[in-house]
Length: 366
Image (cartoon, one colour):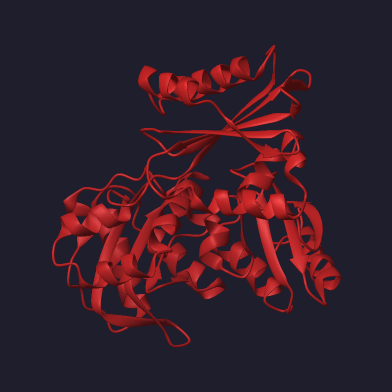
């Protein structure tokens, strides 16, 4: 979790160029004891390789892998430029976040930041913020809804639907989503049949999340089969997207697929569309800004709608043409990315993306 103190926030800064802004941030990182003096050269070299502008008025300058030995401690410095800085080809940055990371720690920082900064309103609020506390609240997601969480309870030895529900409720309780009152409410209300052997139960909770429970063997409830149970714990409206996906699965006659190994993926992303292929990231430091930008550049060369999911992450599919979304996947070396393309050039898009990943996304094959 990203932690910020007020001394890490530089308000109302002025810079005539991104080089001047980077020098300012590097100086602050050095003064804070996070990096050694030469780190600024790595930050400038990174910009020469590829601009670190993310979009929504946000830039994330950081060093190259060759200058990681100059990092003493992982951390960030944040500078606000209300007048804006032209960061790259007419793209204006109002907030620059200087990152110092010793290893792949920066991917976690980037993932958290991109989730917060993907909100256009949040970016505007950062530009207009008049105090450090407001910027800290925005960047750390203090006022943002919590992410939907997902759990599985596979091959649970239940003799009937009630036992399966109790097992799912206990799984949610042990994760801290709710207490005994949540379990009692679930058992009193019971689940409803969605069709094709899939059942749904829901309750108010302290955390929004889903439990996908499957029995060791198919069960029966009256005249209906029990192949899988979905338990929805709702805190806010963050679960509505998954409800839409369930409706789409029902319309496509694919609800029973939830009982299979890809059940959570279907819940997160809805019915499978288009062509798909999976590629493994070989970049030693994962998809940081440079290879991430190269992946997005390749995806944008095709007309097809292309979505990508990190199979070794949370499995949620995002647009492969959004740098902010791609970096937000938190992809490390060895992670498997599933790409799904829909459109006239979908097949060519998957071939092109696969070739780019095999070539190292601008960093060379290893």
